[in-house]
Length: 318
Image (cartoon, rainbow, N blue to C red; front, side, top):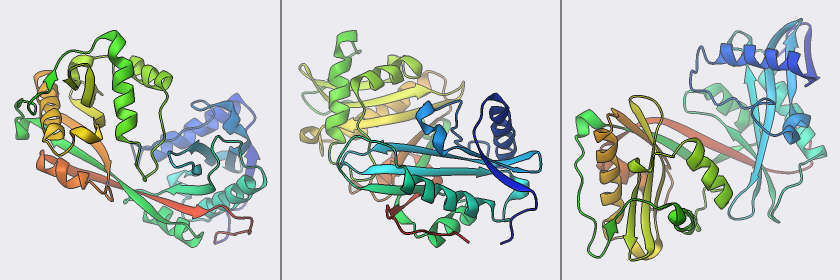
């Protein structure tokens, strides 16, 4: 497809480009209000070499960004991100972005921990078929599907239930956070769908920033050991989010996850929340989508995640 006349792609230079990025974000969010749009004002400066601002004449029409991390199995993922003003879509800009990003990452991949292979990643929600088709033409293939589900607390009317025999719930003390963090990491140790290990320092930042109301948490104890945990957080006056449901392996298949999730929903309801959201993986071997549906959750959005091998061959994305 022919690029728009007077199209330019330039490196990030400072505050003026932040204003350009904000203009693109504002336009994108008119059609996708919950769009995740990181950039130079939200992420570390190490990402700046992979930021380009697209303009047609003087008007900002899009920008690129790249994030990266090392997953549990050592895979070093390079997530290629690009955002185009809705008025300027289907004019070849997204393909131009992706071609530039693939080449730039090949020539100068970031230094990352781990010894696994570099892999390119791309995101396309189920309501973004154009993005999916662009990734597929560039050799990306579906890796797994993130699922967002929501429980209507007024409809479900959750009530607390007892824990399995021998386990008790009690409020979390300050010194016990390390045990909770260790239990979460142990529970996800065998995850094969992009799990990124979280340091204790990062866990504490998450608690301080978003999850400080531990009254919404449910922690099951076996003596001085954490058997399982459900962490809930308040997003706004009516909405809660459950970022973590973790049961250690030796406590599974005893009904603990069911009890902790139900008790967490009951606490959210008692706190005045109307709905609670959770994310999981469709392909999860534990069939977590079905589990949450039995708890009263319903599908809200599918977010397929795509990947392609890191190689040195050039690709021009049409």
